[in-house]
Image (cartoon, rainbow, N blue to C red; front, side, top):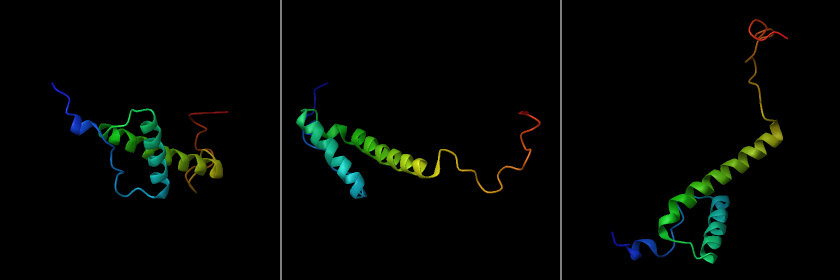
Length: 88
């Protein structure tokens, strides 16, 4: 099957709804790909997933740094709740 160059060449469009943090990461990744001559329209969805997950991971890491890895819900565990199955 012949490669459709019109479909492949060019740059992907930034997804709608990206806030400033997402847009900054998008621009950084697109710039890196352009400099490596690996940028194409076809890679847009992959870059979107990467950027969304990178921003989400950074927010999660900041939350963990502030609150710890586990935040128990108030009243979630009764005293002695695990003594029958997990003594000691």
